[in-house]
Length: 368
Image (cartoon, rainbow, N blue to C red):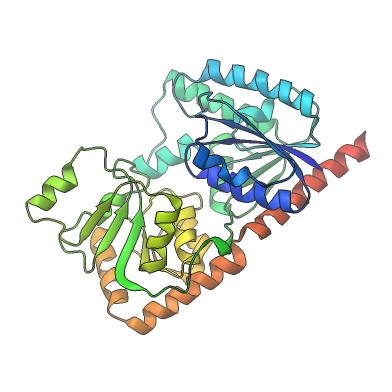
């Protein structure tokens, strides 16, 4: 079987793509990969070395959620049609909405990793104000979803958001994201600190919940501060946030090392269609403390401790209670690890997608 897949090199979709393509290649599936957003760096493409029957077509076309992207979308769709015509895949797997409506006679999956409207509602409590950009974005998403034979989401919650904001798909499925457990180090000696990943300027990640002067234990926040520039550093110089340690963006190797040593991971997001960082922490045997939002409840069930939604005081209380009870901390570390290892590994994810590909190809053959 031959799958043509799109991806972007900005954010977690590239990690998802790497995991899925790697597993598909190991199973003998040929993959033609077309990337958008930015030309990938050499460190982003190292994983392709040694994989058989995988070819990459990198581009720097703007992504559909970016403003003033329409001309790039139209040009990239034309290029994509040419690549499809040349490579002759059996099935199309689009990790962007826009390409679901591409004009070619092949079965296709569109994966709804996240979207602007559901992000805006989660952060602001209402749909985004009307503008030419948001109208065009909605039209592109609706058209792309309507062109999909199957719409896939990484959680039931995210699938519900797609249906709520853009209409009912023709067919739909949930395939949970996965990572390869062998990439992580769950048996290293743990130290008494917590870790969280999130950019301070990203209201969806809501890392600002950690900006409290009385965090009950050392906490490392990984991610760019950027805006407001220097705010945390200035506050710390005045004696605030004594237990918060800011680290800028980390390489995957550096982050794995931090996860392997951290006792717990704090998931502060108010918008999280799935959450790869908590999964990576769980595969490193970190206990999970999570904001009580539906998607994190769905993913982690009773394998995480939850704090009252968006409540920094309750977050502090939850951290303090877990940090002071070593047996409970160990119990939740094991719970998170077992759920992550058995439910959210990349081999399971690849098998689920293979079932969808085969069903689409079978239908195509039957109706030919």
